[in-house]
Image 1 (cartoon, rainbow, N blue to C red):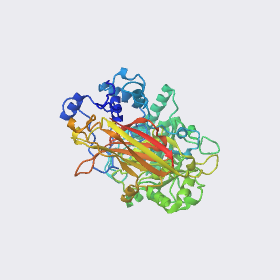
Image 2: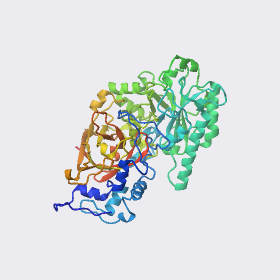
Image 3: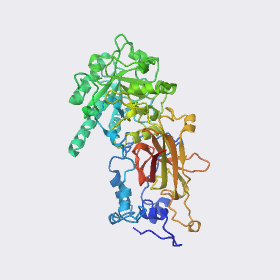
Length: 603
């Protein structure tokens, strides 16, 4: 690895020179030639992008992000080994000392910047000793649908394996009677053209995922996996419901929670549910009618849905499995004012629209109070037939435990979900102002302002849009701050005006040496010779997120997104340069990274 060069005028090496010597951005000239001529080894390409920067692409077998585990597996070592394989580094490069500015052409500084994690959750986040209602849960909606169409999608039991592997801990199963075999209920999006799969196959996939996690934890000597919650969306006849309960008991065995862990029926601590599987089951009070439109989250598909479920009650065999999550529908606004007495462990199952309306009408404090004691699940509107999601921060900001996301694409909501649960086991302890402590009401929300700064130095190995060459793209970084108090539940045009968005200038590499005095890396590894700093000032809050997009400044066209990242501000490691792992719009890891430095301060 070459040493830091000295400018011809004898001046001190610039930040640009030092970063070029660090070599995460410098490319082998022969490799650049191969990239641009399209010869040799096949290059990774970014998926085609439609232009809507909040929209993602359908997930694939290689998708890892969305649930919180996207950067958890081998990320640091991959970063080093990839650069060694590319010929950019040698093992001998990873030794030495840094200069007074913290940089070195070889050695310790390079080692440190490669292994440094950009975000580490606050210590309290992974505390397992609090009651279940004190946590946010990484959650999916219509988990069986394998592509973005909610009306004509393919159903797959393997999707449950993928979702759980990504870090999500709550999955949904829509259960229907099977006309061909009454002993084997099916899973499908009812009264649509979506395919169907056996309920048994879904249960077996969930059970296998938990068994695999338990075995891995035992072998590694790490903490026992946290529970998996199953939202049982029942459309079965009484006989079909008995089969649902029987199949789950047979497959899950002792892992399935079938009775309270505490004789007094108290809400369990999260640690008490380690390695267990819990069900969310609809509950109806004595004399209450079963209204399928409001009880579930089908979004009112049609009149036939009511016929399909007319007079169907939850039989005792299935109802008994909803030990800690008896799913109930909201009754007007009473739930905002009164504590639910029946059932004893309620889960309020509410659509995004009614909950957002309550928040916007000034009932946020009432929602927080409710959610500090009882569970709440928020599901997407039935009109989201392309799997576009609600934005979760406003709902997390009032303590909603289960914000169920359509996990078919890696869109803005899934990117934020990845950031929220990054570095966790699928559960996040809520900030003190959203949870009860020793029977006391939530603490006051923090006051004051926070200033966030992000300095962008450069990027490395960006995966270019399909058919694009390095000298054709003009990369720039655009960032949006997501704050629970500053955004509505969906990114409307008005929200876009309110969303605190910032961007850098576009990078333009020079083809002719006479036009510049510095190294001019190609467009797939841009380096801003004068690092640019983006800043935000906002009301202090612990659930603020930064979403980062790499786009190309294209003339006469909508600028395409070709790489994304998202971070929770409270988890940021500040004051040092870090590499952010970049994902494509399918939630797949790319070889690309963004070199940035964060600063967070009270103002």
